[in-house]
Amino acid sequence: MAMLLRPNEHWVANTRSIWAYLLLKHGSLSLAGEELQLYRSGAQDSEMAYPLWCDIHARMKPSTEKLAELSSEVAKSKGLEAGAFGYLWSDAVSNALYEVFNKK
Image (cartoon, rainbow, N blue to C red; front, side, top):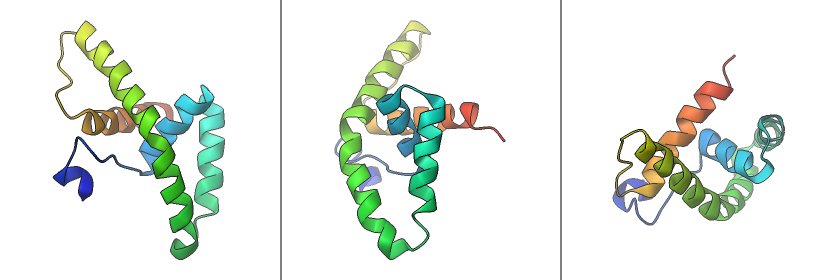
């Protein structure tokens, strides 16, 4: 909700955006997938999972900004405009990348 109200200040921490954060962190599709699976398997109890996901959310800011920057450059090279809301753009790119690389 906060991201929708203030998209220049807040970012999304969901499965897909955290996967993208882990992809940038490790530089490996397999390592990102493995670490995400570890986070998800330990998140069975929502009360126990909340501190873990909060910690990940706080660490995501630099990589979320980097993903927005990198993907904006790609968009420009294709004649597209990413827009002024970098965190929203980064979330959309995270979603698209997750869809491409995590087909089952």
